[in-house]
Length: 161
Image (tube, helix red, strand yellow):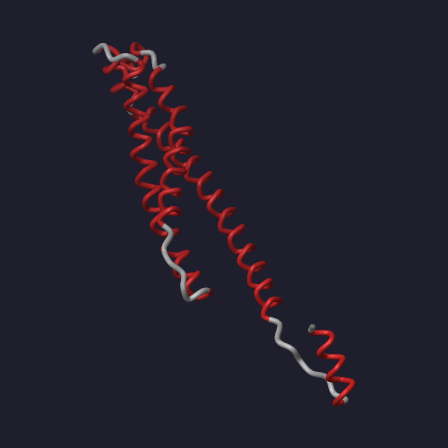
């Protein structure tokens, strides 16, 4: 339609005309939005990996600092499962608090950015809960390593320091 209109206008009036094509504008916006969303996924994935590495290193440090306490627990008769459960719960609490803060800031910053692009943007609660659940899942996966280290601690070596 655009090329037919241009050629017809050129034949009849001898000058060129510009046509506005909303479909082409929409396709360009769709491509830009797709790029923006992919960048968000990549940044979210990198933040998740950085957070999980940080969570693991904090929990390993926590296990190393509390070796005498773990040895005392084992000397009192705590099973390795109970110690594993204790450190796993600590990891989940740490991951949950980090997930809530990250999902809060990510959702509201995304809302502010998308309001500039689209005036009808709204807060996505599904994205908020998806962020928290992914933080809990990766926290659980990466938190099992320090928890298993704590559960396998030899009580005699731990109490000796």
